[in-house]
Amino acid sequence: MLKIPTVKECITKPLFTLQPDTDIYAAVDTLVAHKASGAPVVNEAGELVGILTEKDCLRVLSSAAYGSLVTGKVRDFMSEVKLTIPAHMDMFAAVQAFLISNFARLPVENDKLVGTVSRKDMLRAIQDFHKHLVTAYGHADAGIPGIEAPQSIEKIQKMVASQSKEQLAAVFSARHVALPPEQ
Image (tube, one colour):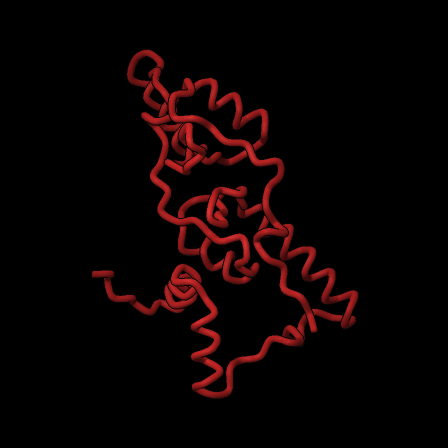
């Protein structure tokens, strides 16, 4: 049986974070030094409170076109975390999460922040998976052995029950099915 990689296997290492009270230009230096598209922002208790992205930093720098350079702290410019993914999520569901998100990097949680995964990490995982398929089966174009569509209502129910709300939302959103708003 073919093993599908999980997010845990694709996590960017080592994990680095930013604090809300870090100077924004020091945070830019950190992102550049790590060659990262963003970083999670955690409070003193280690809780995820936001994410600082390249786009957030570009907004800071673009304001200089209208006067002097803006100053401030990470908390003043960070984005709200709208989506985190669990470490046990498989590669395919993670790709779906990226397709519905505007972020190039997503925080990975397993009861607490354990890392981040980026679009580039997913590309590497796809590349490695493809190589594995070719090595194991001589080709990669005949479908993925061991993955089959559920053939009964019971199998569909078991599959749905084993997935998180975020994973299901990613699958349904990717198929352009409108989900009712939560109440």
